[in-house]
Image (cartoon, rainbow, N blue to C red):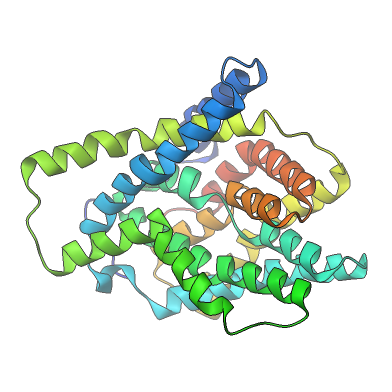
Length: 322
């Protein structure tokens, strides 16, 4: 995968990385306090999340994608390495769930926890700052792969488990869901803009910059506020899923990206760092929507997010210089 240009960034040491990530987790902590103290109501959190998801984050993703070409963003080797490593974590959680005699729907939700990180709300703003502007392309490719492949997979598994079979009629609904996802749409539009080499008018660029700048604080605050309503029940299961997400997933992705399907070093580092992110909040949305173990997912999100304050800097530091 080609790099998006710009200077070569020296990856700092563990303490320096921890200090760099601390403001991001500090914003999550501030949001948690606001939610726990009821200064920010659940309704306010829901509307803030909607603003970030549909407007601010979409503007940020469009701006990133509009500076890349499809050739710079797309790499079969990158996708293969990420899919291999993510599948290892996914299948590990799935196997343990089956050993516990869980039904397929619950096993699939646990596997989703083990494999899907908070790339959109946490990874995009944080990793681009820490790893440099060249991280934008790899992060967007990880985000797109998660949404297209694994969001589709979890829907198929739960639907198949409930109906006893997979129906061809579900395919149009899945495609429509992808087309309604603002993150997919904004990245696709940004790449189209870049492909046609369209000039960005000054006022439009400034508008996107101002709106996109709200994504980072808004997303992190919303993460924290949403965590305030979660409790760590069934801590042993939450701990296992957090271990899969924060340790097994990045380790498997590292094996794939550095050894099995060697990826360009900087892109591999970004991919591994993205794999080390805590469980994504949209897994809870899916669990709640389908009525499949939402409290278990909530606990996994809470435990993995708290633990990631230490594990994410450790993973990035372990990668060494790009």
